[in-house]
Length: 124
Image 1 (cartoon, rainbow, N blue to C red):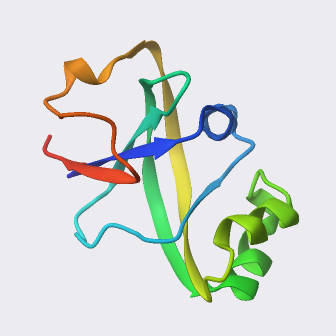
Image 2 (image 1 turned 135 degrees about the vertical axis):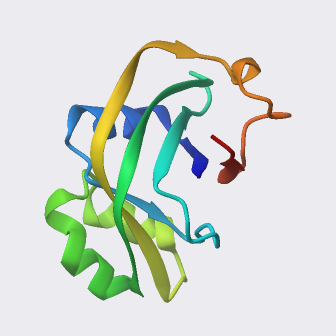
């Protein structure tokens, strides 16, 4: 099964350039059979630009999460802590086998009503 994940365009670029090896989330999908993430670059780009496989999902307290992932985070420590705010725990999706599409496409190609706020399940 797939999940459509909304990602800011700068971070989406960093994922596909290989700079960003973790995608951080305050909440995560509950279905266990998700193995591929379809990346939707949010405003102003507003298109599906690629996909990656999930190597693992780490759930930990914020300090431990940063310590484990900082070297391949693609973001600053300041941004990381600002993003999580007052959260005591968070998720890091480890990215592998990322593939940027040659021809990004709009959500009209998928049968979805609009861009996900965070994520949306998709059937293959």
